[in-house]
Length: 458
Image (cartoon, rainbow, N blue to C red; front, side, top):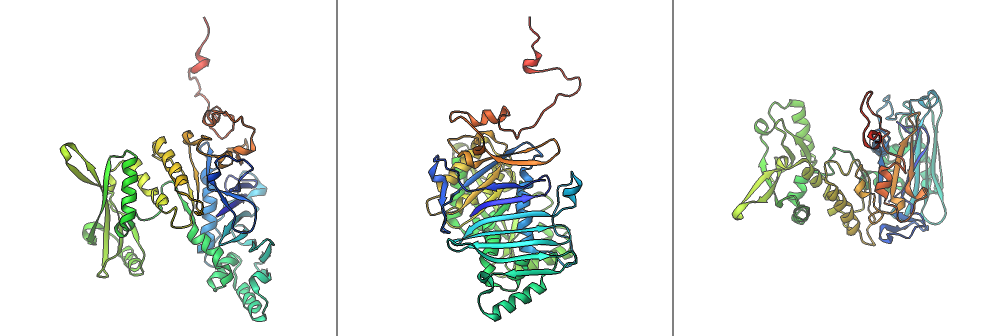
């Protein structure tokens, strides 16, 4: 589970932005809390909502998590620039490194992992853990101006044998200035770091405003219970969909992917042969997934919906024929199906994109209802939907705001940091500007005043 994420000197964040999923002392919505497994007292929140005007940093905070995740999992090639982007609206920040730090809890251990990097090198990197009540050091890394990497390890990582220490020294010598030691060590099979890497690889799931969580067509084809769950939710959501089905075909490149370059065809075939699933959109706008069929040949899968009509008649429609809102809902519904089967930390940019406010609320409330005492998943999302700013739905410490100052630097803060009356309608207070994070609108030059300003008396 995610406890904290901090980013400093990145994009629109000049100073440290600290996002916390550690609950405050409030006793509202106790079902939204998860107890720590790492031998500590903090209660962990299940969900968080991020609000702010366009361009004030919501997406950049999500991008910061995704960038750090990709840097950890994929690394960079020798000589390649590291993927950081500092705050550029003052000279000192533009010439300084960017800082990322995660505090997470996974498999009963609390980890503090972070790094400081510019576009040429990782200046510093650190990992501490709390496998029990006492905090221990795994490693600390420093890279000097000449690119020489020095790593100091603690017993939690190096063990107590000379052979283990010598092996880690060898791994440290192979770490490049522009590569994270964590990435290098996992590539070298340092087992003590595998759980942390696994959290970034399998648990943290960052989804862009236009991204898909997973290939719907393949999962619907493979799991009948999943197909039934999605169909039932769509029916309850009033989409008019009464059922779903998958259609499978042998892949015909001339028919399905005409004019596909040979190199792309070879890459697709290599991916499918290795067991990967490829999701594509053809020139006609149709979305489908490709996977290996029973005969070892590429198989194409489509998803179709079924609607009831007059006099008991029904008809099927391709996924692309559904409204944009229904498509978006279908793309994020697997998160609800997975709540009780796997530990996931979902970070979604623009959860409410193209969704009716009632559907956004239904999604969030259903997620919370699906979570039992044993489930350890989390849902973090950005939104403009003020319908979700409701203390009957969310706790104060689950609501966050981002606002830029006059110098273009974003600030992140929680509703629980503000003095708010218990009976205040949060959505109305937000739109009235009481909490910040809203656009500062100006009239066009020469525009006639509106609202109260239009009244001249008499």
